[in-house]
Image 1: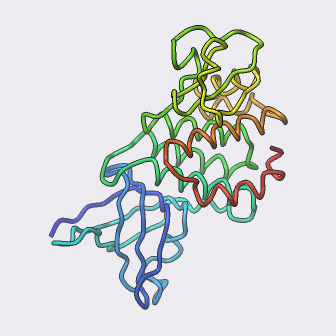
Image 2: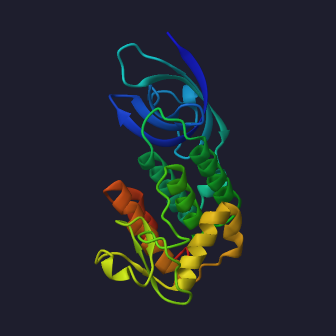
Image 3: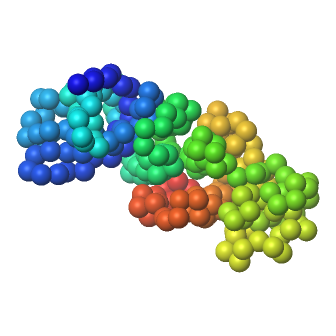
Length: 256
């Protein structure tokens, strides 16, 4: 029987049986894994509050012969990010970030960049109110970590320069922004972006979470960039994230 100690972020828990849970973790060492937590609902002493979603934990797991799931032996919280849980907008952003991270990667493929990004974003939400620019920076960073970042520095179809001051189309099918000459070839549902909104996305893609503080993304740029990235992500995943609906409901709280 093989045992391992992992640093992880709890992405999701699902109740099963009378008292058990299946826990999805994003780990630094092994990427996304699912683990079986026996009797997790029967006794809080064994796992305490460490099974709460978007908690940073130290986990001990074991391989289970013939089973797809790891066995979760112990779980100790390293950071519960308590500041998130008293604020609806922060909860919505954290839940969305956790679901996006879960959906972007396959099981058992290490993604240290994505792990570090999610941990950093949760820490930022813990320390300060949710802001649209930080969420856009997380989305772009997560797409980059998964190899799906849209092209924002030039036309994704022809490689040509993007005309300054002219509206652009962010086309998921072509993988990024389209110049004026290629815009007519965009899919009908490809969102339009003002040049200023597209430039803001490019700056956030380049600077990451650190750049979010200097990007207010006030309306209408906040709405434009939100809708454009939502359409791009939905195209890449093939479906709409469940947490996206909750996030849209608190959009006004985020000043989007």
